[in-house]
Length: 66
Image 1 (tube, rainbow, N blue to C red):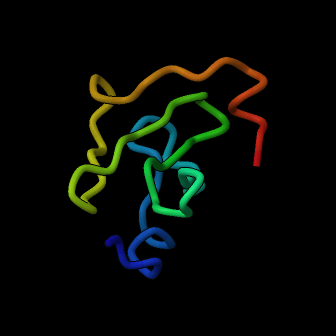
Image 2 (cartoon, rainbow, N blue to C red; image 1 turned 90 degrees about the vertical axis):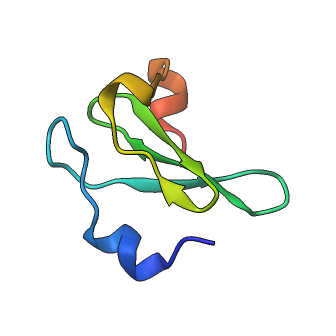
């Protein structure tokens, strides 16, 4: 599981902006989202993969969702 203090220190590798944690229906962390760039960075085994080429693009509606 990812430490929430770590999430507070991480920034988007593209724009250096803040990231938001997204969770699945069971409230497990699944990805870190940059709303500004509309990118979702995956978490694999609790480790954030902060590579632009590993991120998925988000539609505008999903990027704005909290």
